[in-house]
Image (cartoon, rainbow, N blue to C red; front, side):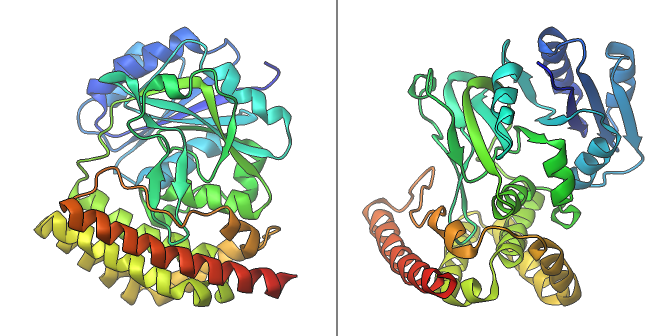
Length: 353
Protein backbone atom coordinates (compact mmCIF):
# COMPACT_ATOMS: atom_id res chain seq x y z
CA UNK A 1 0.00 0.00 0.00
CA UNK A 2 2.99 2.31 0.37
CA UNK A 3 1.62 3.98 3.47
CA UNK A 4 2.27 2.94 7.03
CA UNK A 5 -1.04 2.83 8.86
CA UNK A 6 -1.82 3.24 12.53
CA UNK A 7 -5.24 2.09 13.74
CA UNK A 8 -6.26 3.86 16.94
CA UNK A 9 -9.01 2.56 19.20
CA UNK A 10 -10.22 4.14 22.43
CA UNK A 11 -11.66 1.60 24.86
CA UNK A 12 -13.93 2.33 27.79
CA UNK A 13 -15.48 -0.76 29.44
CA UNK A 14 -15.52 -2.31 26.01
CA UNK A 15 -14.97 -5.94 26.92
CA UNK A 16 -18.24 -7.15 25.26
CA UNK A 17 -17.11 -5.73 21.90
CA UNK A 18 -13.35 -6.22 21.84
CA UNK A 19 -13.13 -9.78 20.56
CA UNK A 20 -15.26 -8.94 17.53
CA UNK A 21 -13.36 -5.72 16.83
CA UNK A 22 -9.79 -6.92 17.33
CA UNK A 23 -10.26 -10.25 15.58
CA UNK A 24 -11.51 -8.41 12.49
CA UNK A 25 -8.39 -6.23 12.54
CA UNK A 26 -6.08 -9.19 12.92
CA UNK A 27 -7.72 -10.74 9.84
CA UNK A 28 -7.71 -7.62 7.67
CA UNK A 29 -4.67 -5.48 8.52
CA UNK A 30 -1.40 -5.79 6.57
CA UNK A 31 1.72 -6.81 8.51
CA UNK A 32 3.19 -3.30 8.44
CA UNK A 33 0.16 -1.71 10.12
CA UNK A 34 0.15 -1.06 13.84
CA UNK A 35 -2.70 -1.00 16.37
CA UNK A 36 -2.69 1.55 19.18
CA UNK A 37 -5.28 1.05 21.92
CA UNK A 38 -6.01 3.58 24.66
CA UNK A 39 -7.85 2.12 27.64
CA UNK A 40 -9.65 5.12 29.08
CA UNK A 41 -10.06 4.09 32.72
CA UNK A 42 -12.02 0.87 32.13
CA UNK A 43 -13.17 -1.07 35.18
CA UNK A 44 -14.24 -4.27 33.39
CA UNK A 45 -10.81 -5.80 32.79
CA UNK A 46 -10.54 -4.59 29.19
CA UNK A 47 -6.83 -3.75 29.50
CA UNK A 48 -5.86 -7.20 30.84
CA UNK A 49 -7.91 -8.90 28.12
CA UNK A 50 -6.16 -6.85 25.41
CA UNK A 51 -2.74 -7.72 26.82
CA UNK A 52 -3.53 -11.43 26.66
CA UNK A 53 -5.36 -11.49 23.31
CA UNK A 54 -3.49 -8.87 21.28
CA UNK A 55 -0.02 -8.48 22.77
CA UNK A 56 1.31 -6.98 19.53
CA UNK A 57 -0.86 -3.88 20.01
CA UNK A 58 0.57 -0.83 21.73
CA UNK A 59 -1.60 -0.41 24.83
CA UNK A 60 -1.86 2.84 26.79
CA UNK A 61 -3.78 2.70 30.06
CA UNK A 62 -5.32 5.74 31.73
CA UNK A 63 -6.24 5.63 35.39
CA UNK A 64 -9.41 7.62 34.72
CA UNK A 65 -11.64 8.45 31.76
CA UNK A 66 -10.06 11.47 30.07
CA UNK A 67 -12.80 11.75 27.47
CA UNK A 68 -12.90 10.36 23.96
CA UNK A 69 -11.27 13.37 22.27
CA UNK A 70 -8.31 13.49 24.66
CA UNK A 71 -7.75 9.73 24.48
CA UNK A 72 -7.73 9.84 20.67
CA UNK A 73 -5.13 12.62 20.79
CA UNK A 74 -3.10 10.52 23.21
CA UNK A 75 -3.17 7.53 20.88
CA UNK A 76 -2.30 9.63 17.84
CA UNK A 77 0.69 11.15 19.65
CA UNK A 78 2.30 7.72 20.03
CA UNK A 79 1.29 6.33 16.63
CA UNK A 80 3.91 6.07 13.87
CA UNK A 81 1.72 5.81 10.78
CA UNK A 82 1.51 8.27 7.92
CA UNK A 83 -2.24 7.62 7.95
CA UNK A 84 -4.19 7.48 11.20
CA UNK A 85 -7.33 5.34 11.21
CA UNK A 86 -9.75 5.82 14.11
CA UNK A 87 -12.22 3.06 14.99
CA UNK A 88 -14.77 2.85 17.77
CA UNK A 89 -14.45 -0.10 20.11
CA UNK A 90 -17.85 -1.45 19.00
CA UNK A 91 -16.97 -1.80 15.32
CA UNK A 92 -16.05 -4.72 13.09
CA UNK A 93 -14.11 -4.25 9.86
CA UNK A 94 -15.18 -6.11 6.73
CA UNK A 95 -12.46 -7.89 4.72
CA UNK A 96 -10.98 -5.51 2.16
CA UNK A 97 -12.05 -2.37 4.05
CA UNK A 98 -8.64 -0.74 4.43
CA UNK A 99 -7.27 -0.48 0.89
CA UNK A 100 -10.13 1.59 -0.57
CA UNK A 101 -10.13 3.81 2.52
CA UNK A 102 -6.48 4.68 1.87
CA UNK A 103 -6.54 4.97 -1.91
CA UNK A 104 -7.96 8.54 -2.07
CA UNK A 105 -4.95 9.86 -0.16
CA UNK A 106 -3.02 9.74 -3.41
CA UNK A 107 -4.73 13.10 -3.99
CA UNK A 108 -2.95 15.62 -1.71
CA UNK A 109 -6.19 17.62 -1.32
CA UNK A 110 -7.94 14.71 0.37
CA UNK A 111 -7.47 15.06 4.10
CA UNK A 112 -9.98 12.59 5.56
CA UNK A 113 -11.89 9.52 4.36
CA UNK A 114 -14.77 7.63 5.94
CA UNK A 115 -16.26 4.21 5.09
CA UNK A 116 -19.81 3.03 4.69
CA UNK A 117 -20.91 2.28 8.26
CA UNK A 118 -23.54 -0.46 8.53
CA UNK A 119 -25.57 -1.56 11.52
CA UNK A 120 -23.95 -4.50 13.29
CA UNK A 121 -27.36 -6.10 13.94
CA UNK A 122 -28.82 -5.21 10.53
CA UNK A 123 -25.90 -5.47 8.10
CA UNK A 124 -27.92 -4.62 5.00
CA UNK A 125 -28.90 -1.21 6.42
CA UNK A 126 -26.74 1.92 6.46
CA UNK A 127 -25.98 3.75 9.66
CA UNK A 128 -23.97 6.50 7.98
CA UNK A 129 -22.00 7.42 4.88
CA UNK A 130 -20.31 10.37 6.51
CA UNK A 131 -22.35 13.33 7.74
CA UNK A 132 -24.44 16.14 6.32
CA UNK A 133 -23.83 19.30 8.34
CA UNK A 134 -26.46 22.03 8.58
CA UNK A 135 -25.12 25.56 8.66
CA UNK A 136 -26.38 25.85 12.25
CA UNK A 137 -24.28 22.87 13.30
CA UNK A 138 -27.07 20.30 13.33
CA UNK A 139 -25.69 17.01 12.03
CA UNK A 140 -27.44 14.24 10.11
CA UNK A 141 -26.03 10.83 9.20
CA UNK A 142 -25.97 10.53 5.40
CA UNK A 143 -28.11 7.72 3.95
CA UNK A 144 -29.32 6.77 7.44
CA UNK A 145 -31.55 3.70 7.24
CA UNK A 146 -31.09 3.19 3.50
CA UNK A 147 -30.34 -0.22 2.04
CA UNK A 148 -26.69 -1.11 1.62
CA UNK A 149 -27.37 -1.68 -2.06
CA UNK A 150 -27.97 2.08 -2.47
CA UNK A 151 -24.22 2.78 -2.34
CA UNK A 152 -22.75 -0.55 -3.42
CA UNK A 153 -20.43 0.10 -6.36
CA UNK A 154 -20.84 3.88 -6.13
CA UNK A 155 -17.81 6.16 -6.52
CA UNK A 156 -16.37 8.16 -3.66
CA UNK A 157 -18.11 11.44 -2.92
CA UNK A 158 -17.18 14.56 -0.97
CA UNK A 159 -19.00 14.90 2.35
CA UNK A 160 -19.22 17.66 4.94
CA UNK A 161 -17.85 15.48 7.73
CA UNK A 162 -16.61 11.98 8.44
CA UNK A 163 -18.29 9.49 10.73
CA UNK A 164 -16.75 9.37 14.19
CA UNK A 165 -17.22 5.58 14.33
CA UNK A 166 -14.64 5.03 11.60
CA UNK A 167 -12.45 7.38 9.58
CA UNK A 168 -8.93 7.91 8.32
CA UNK A 169 -6.89 11.10 8.25
CA UNK A 170 -3.51 12.01 6.86
CA UNK A 171 -1.11 12.45 9.80
CA UNK A 172 0.19 15.73 8.39
CA UNK A 173 -3.35 17.09 8.28
CA UNK A 174 -4.07 15.86 11.82
CA UNK A 175 -0.98 17.65 13.11
CA UNK A 176 -1.70 20.79 11.10
CA UNK A 177 -5.19 20.97 12.62
CA UNK A 178 -4.02 20.10 16.13
CA UNK A 179 -6.12 16.93 16.40
CA UNK A 180 -9.38 16.85 18.28
CA UNK A 181 -10.44 19.72 20.52
CA UNK A 182 -10.31 18.12 23.97
CA UNK A 183 -12.86 20.55 25.41
CA UNK A 184 -15.49 18.66 23.40
CA UNK A 185 -14.84 15.57 25.58
CA UNK A 186 -17.02 13.44 23.27
CA UNK A 187 -19.44 14.01 20.38
CA UNK A 188 -19.04 16.52 17.55
CA UNK A 189 -15.25 16.34 17.80
CA UNK A 190 -14.99 14.65 14.38
CA UNK A 191 -17.46 17.13 12.84
CA UNK A 192 -15.43 20.05 14.18
CA UNK A 193 -12.24 18.44 12.87
CA UNK A 194 -13.81 17.98 9.42
CA UNK A 195 -15.00 21.60 9.37
CA UNK A 196 -11.53 22.86 10.26
CA UNK A 197 -10.07 20.62 7.56
CA UNK A 198 -12.41 22.17 4.99
CA UNK A 199 -11.39 25.67 6.10
CA UNK A 200 -7.76 24.60 5.63
CA UNK A 201 -8.50 23.50 2.05
CA UNK A 202 -8.81 19.72 2.48
CA UNK A 203 -11.63 17.46 1.33
CA UNK A 204 -13.48 14.76 3.26
CA UNK A 205 -14.56 11.75 1.19
CA UNK A 206 -17.03 8.94 1.75
CA UNK A 207 -15.61 5.72 0.29
CA UNK A 208 -18.48 3.29 -0.42
CA UNK A 209 -16.17 0.33 -1.10
CA UNK A 210 -14.84 0.43 2.47
CA UNK A 211 -17.30 -1.14 4.92
CA UNK A 212 -17.30 -1.17 8.71
CA UNK A 213 -20.07 -2.44 10.99
CA UNK A 214 -21.03 -0.49 14.11
CA UNK A 215 -23.03 -1.70 17.11
CA UNK A 216 -23.57 1.75 18.65
CA UNK A 217 -27.14 3.00 18.94
CA UNK A 218 -27.70 6.55 17.73
CA UNK A 219 -31.32 6.68 18.91
CA UNK A 220 -30.77 6.13 22.65
CA UNK A 221 -28.31 8.80 23.85
CA UNK A 222 -27.34 8.91 27.51
CA UNK A 223 -27.80 12.12 29.56
CA UNK A 224 -24.05 12.78 29.18
CA UNK A 225 -24.30 12.28 25.41
CA UNK A 226 -27.22 14.71 25.23
CA UNK A 227 -25.34 17.30 27.27
CA UNK A 228 -22.19 17.02 25.15
CA UNK A 229 -24.17 17.12 21.91
CA UNK A 230 -26.15 20.24 22.90
CA UNK A 231 -23.06 22.06 24.17
CA UNK A 232 -20.66 20.99 21.43
CA UNK A 233 -22.91 22.00 18.55
CA UNK A 234 -22.72 25.57 19.81
CA UNK A 235 -18.97 25.27 20.43
CA UNK A 236 -18.41 24.06 16.88
CA UNK A 237 -20.43 26.86 15.29
CA UNK A 238 -18.81 29.47 17.52
CA UNK A 239 -15.31 28.26 16.61
CA UNK A 240 -15.76 27.94 12.88
CA UNK A 241 -17.90 30.80 11.57
CA UNK A 242 -16.36 34.26 11.21
CA UNK A 243 -17.96 37.29 12.87
CA UNK A 244 -19.88 38.42 9.79
CA UNK A 245 -21.17 34.90 9.19
CA UNK A 246 -22.30 34.61 12.80
CA UNK A 247 -24.17 37.90 12.47
CA UNK A 248 -25.83 36.99 9.17
CA UNK A 249 -26.70 33.46 10.29
CA UNK A 250 -27.90 34.58 13.72
CA UNK A 251 -31.65 34.15 13.01
CA UNK A 252 -31.11 30.59 11.81
CA UNK A 253 -28.87 29.80 14.76
CA UNK A 254 -31.61 30.98 17.15
CA UNK A 255 -34.18 28.83 15.37
CA UNK A 256 -31.87 25.81 15.56
CA UNK A 257 -31.62 26.37 19.30
CA UNK A 258 -35.41 26.36 19.54
CA UNK A 259 -35.49 23.14 17.54
CA UNK A 260 -32.97 21.69 19.98
CA UNK A 261 -35.13 22.76 22.91
CA UNK A 262 -37.97 20.84 21.28
CA UNK A 263 -35.76 17.76 21.09
CA UNK A 264 -34.83 18.23 24.74
CA UNK A 265 -38.49 18.51 25.80
CA UNK A 266 -39.36 15.40 23.79
CA UNK A 267 -36.87 13.42 25.90
CA UNK A 268 -38.34 14.60 29.18
CA UNK A 269 -36.29 15.56 32.20
CA UNK A 270 -32.98 13.99 30.98
CA UNK A 271 -33.17 16.12 27.83
CA UNK A 272 -34.24 19.31 29.62
CA UNK A 273 -31.53 18.88 32.26
CA UNK A 274 -28.88 18.28 29.57
CA UNK A 275 -29.92 21.40 27.66
CA UNK A 276 -29.90 23.56 30.81
CA UNK A 277 -26.47 22.23 31.82
CA UNK A 278 -25.10 22.91 28.33
CA UNK A 279 -26.40 26.49 28.41
CA UNK A 280 -24.96 26.95 31.89
CA UNK A 281 -21.51 25.81 30.75
CA UNK A 282 -21.53 28.17 27.76
CA UNK A 283 -22.53 31.15 29.92
CA UNK A 284 -19.91 30.49 32.58
CA UNK A 285 -16.84 29.83 30.40
CA UNK A 286 -16.29 33.04 28.37
CA UNK A 287 -12.48 32.82 28.50
CA UNK A 288 -12.52 29.25 27.24
CA UNK A 289 -14.85 30.27 24.41
CA UNK A 290 -12.54 33.09 23.33
CA UNK A 291 -9.47 30.85 23.52
CA UNK A 292 -11.09 28.08 21.48
CA UNK A 293 -12.21 30.54 18.83
CA UNK A 294 -8.76 32.11 18.55
CA UNK A 295 -7.14 28.69 18.17
CA UNK A 296 -9.59 27.50 15.52
CA UNK A 297 -9.53 30.61 13.33
CA UNK A 298 -5.77 30.45 12.72
CA UNK A 299 -4.59 29.31 9.30
CA UNK A 300 -7.92 29.40 7.44
CA UNK A 301 -7.43 29.28 3.68
CA UNK A 302 -11.08 28.87 2.62
CA UNK A 303 -13.55 31.67 3.33
CA UNK A 304 -16.97 31.44 4.95
CA UNK A 305 -18.79 32.02 1.65
CA UNK A 306 -17.34 28.79 0.22
CA UNK A 307 -17.99 26.88 3.44
CA UNK A 308 -21.59 28.08 3.59
CA UNK A 309 -22.17 27.02 -0.01
CA UNK A 310 -21.28 23.47 1.06
CA UNK A 311 -23.50 23.52 4.16
CA UNK A 312 -27.09 22.28 4.26
CA UNK A 313 -30.15 24.42 4.89
CA UNK A 314 -32.49 21.42 4.65
CA UNK A 315 -33.30 19.34 7.70
CA UNK A 316 -32.93 15.57 7.49
CA UNK A 317 -34.33 14.16 10.74
CA UNK A 318 -34.33 10.40 11.13
CA UNK A 319 -37.89 10.48 12.50
CA UNK A 320 -40.54 13.20 12.18
CA UNK A 321 -42.84 13.22 15.20
CA UNK A 322 -46.14 15.04 15.62
CA UNK A 323 -47.89 13.70 12.53
CA UNK A 324 -49.17 16.31 10.07
CA UNK A 325 -48.34 19.11 12.52
CA UNK A 326 -44.77 17.88 12.76
CA UNK A 327 -44.39 17.81 9.00
CA UNK A 328 -45.80 21.33 8.68
CA UNK A 329 -43.47 22.55 11.39
CA UNK A 330 -40.51 20.99 9.58
CA UNK A 331 -41.55 22.67 6.33
CA UNK A 332 -41.81 26.07 8.03
CA UNK A 333 -38.39 25.65 9.62
CA UNK A 334 -36.86 24.69 6.30
CA UNK A 335 -38.42 27.73 4.59
CA UNK A 336 -36.90 30.00 7.24
CA UNK A 337 -33.53 28.27 7.07
CA UNK A 338 -33.54 28.51 3.28
CA UNK A 339 -34.20 32.26 3.36
CA UNK A 340 -31.58 32.89 6.02
CA UNK A 341 -29.03 30.74 4.16
CA UNK A 342 -29.64 32.56 0.86
CA UNK A 343 -29.42 36.06 2.34
CA UNK A 344 -26.25 35.20 4.26
CA UNK A 345 -24.69 33.51 1.21
CA UNK A 346 -25.34 36.59 -0.95
CA UNK A 347 -23.86 38.98 1.62
CA UNK A 348 -20.79 36.83 2.29
CA UNK A 349 -20.15 36.37 -1.43
CA UNK A 350 -20.25 40.14 -2.02
CA UNK A 351 -18.12 40.85 1.03
CA UNK A 352 -15.39 38.48 -0.12
CA UNK A 353 -15.61 39.27 -3.86
